[in-house]
Amino acid sequence: MYDQPAWTVVVFASGALALGYVAGARPGRPNLNHPVSKWSDRAPLLGAAGGAVLLWIVARLVTRDLGVLTVGVIVVGAVVGTGIGLLAASLAKKTARVTFSPRTIATAAVVAAVAAEIGWVLWRTLITHVDWPSAKQSIPFPQLDVVSGTALSVGGVTIQRSAIFTVAALAICAIGLWFFINRTRVGRGMQAVSQDPDTARLMGINVDRIIVVAFALGAVLAAIAGVSQGLQNSNIQYRMGFLAGLKAFTAAVLGGIGNIYGAVVGGLVLGVVEAMATQYIPGQFGGSTWKDVWAFVILILVLVFRPQGLLGARVVDRA
Image (cartoon, rainbow, N blue to C red; front, side):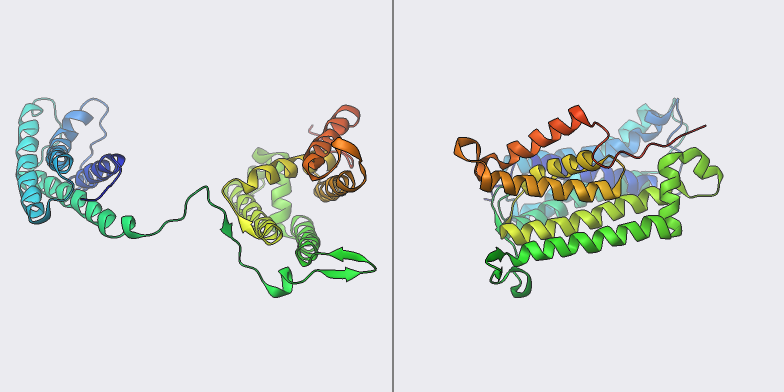
């Protein structure tokens, strides 16, 4: 007997029901979305697929490993589902606008029964035999000798190779982002959409495409940041991005929301403040355990005395 979670039965049953319904509705592609009779029209297909899946659920709840009885469950389920579908068709005949042949109803029942069993077999033979890592377990991050090798010593100062990679990636990404935003057609379109999407659409800019490019660009930059953090921490875990996301927002606020240069400056200021707080603040309020606290203290001070950020937020004037 295999120890599958109880929710797998529900998942496979829902998927099989959907596949059975689609298989029955596809021949001829009838309109099953009429606002008045849509449920009467769908009743035969839902009854056929639902009846087959229901018998499969009962069999699986009785025993998780049917063995040679699997084919019998599929056949009997298809027969029962077909009968329920025909019964539902006869009951909904007066109010239905679409009629289905017995062959179509049987197709829905057979597809639902087979789909449910195939999904279960795939789970039992493949997924349960894979040694999946725990979601809460830290996973070692691949280390490269060039990037994460022995630390460098320059003038008595020890510099980690991963820190050099981070600074280099920051410079390259900042320059590349500036060039993309200010020197390319898509970048200028992105600025126009951020200022006034309706007017940008009237000027011939594909707003939807610009939004997709913006999300893709953000994902690429986030991936580079994730690689940098993985190299510094030597491992990755499911919550490693939470604090990094908070600090990224903090850096953007420090520099000025909407200001690319401000975000870079805010990130550098935040890093310097954390490093200095760790090294030079004595007593119980210093050390690495308090570096995050001092970072958010700086954020609070900036919000109180200079809400627009160090370099000022970009404000769009509209007529």
